[in-house]
Image 1 (cartoon, rainbow, N blue to C red):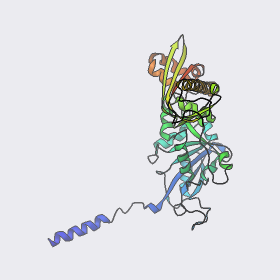
Image 2 (cartoon, helix red, strand yellow):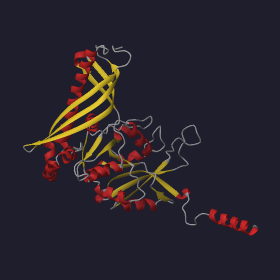
Image 3 (cartoon, one colour):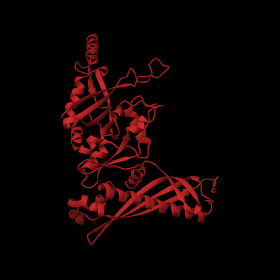
Image 4 (cartoon, rainbow, N blue to C red):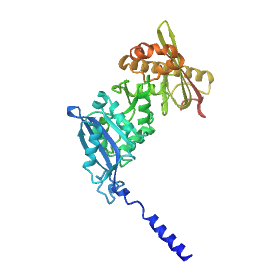
Amino acid sequence: MKRLTAAGIVLSVLLLTGCWDRTEINHYAFWMGTFMDRAKDNEIRVSAQIAVPSQIGFSEGSSGSGEDQGSIVVSATAPTLLASCQLIQDKLPRRLFIGHRRAVFIGQSLAESGIRDLMDMYTRNLETSFRTSVFIVIGEKPERVLEMKSPFEPLSSSAAVDIEKYSKNGDKSFRDFIVAMKNETTCPVLSVINTADIENKKAGQVFEINRLAIFNKKTQLAGILDPEDSLMALRVMARLNQHIVTQYISKGDGYVTLFESNQRTRIQTKIEGGQVSVHIKLTGTGTLRENRTKFDLLDSKALAVVQKELNEGLSKEVLKSINKVQSTYGTDIFGFGDAIHQQHPGEWQKLKGNWEQTFPHVKVFVDVNLHIVRIGAQGSPT
């Protein structure tokens, strides 16, 4: 019995010694954010935001200096993305770990030249998380996005992800982009960050994420929508995170503001005489948040007038945004081609080879049916 006990103790000690070749956590450099852009001679410049755990959480008045950002930025330039990453590793005394990376920022110049090759490298990297958020950065000195000091997050990459999460745009990840890239009809979209917003905010560097970058099927940046067109595009795509609707009611001589929920998008397509038409029906329910009209909305007739004008106004705004994307950029970000493929598979075989040329000439009809279900305890304006 004593021999068995001694053997058990020895075996336990051996098992507790661990692996001789493992990497301790304090030997890792955690790569939290990436910025990429074109450099001279068509090379790729990569900047890595590396977390510095000893500085995270410091602020003025504490033991820190108040200037610590919780990270350092290391950059390198090479002919390929992977070569640039290796040069960054060569500059660090710790092994790079990319599994916790939260955001990838792509400069406008690189986006315009096409990012398919970059997506190829990331899809082959087993350490890459497909939930990583991706942004297009415009404005002067776009790499500044990695050095931004947010009043809410020690790392600007984390701040960007959280801002997008709670914005109207909703988050957009590698996975979403790759799915759209592989789709034979729908073109990808990404959120946009403008460095001008960062430069204009001196007391705590914050920025807005309210614009969409749209790509063609070659994954080249085709254009950037303004905030209103971005909002309407996301509504059609059924990807709007939240929607506060403010509409002027002419018969009521004032504005109403509603919170829209239960949003639904239905797309029906027709092909007659070679002409493609798309009929979009947008439905949802609205909760009245503010009434600045002269109407008492407890009156069902007045409520019907407001609802009618609201739906007509939204229909016009959505149609205007769709037509702008058709005429200016010619990229199908709405999934019209997908709808034709599903509803008219035989006709789609004739159209798919020339869809980019056909899409700008598609006739679009929009019908919005937003039903106001709650107006609060007081129907008249305050």
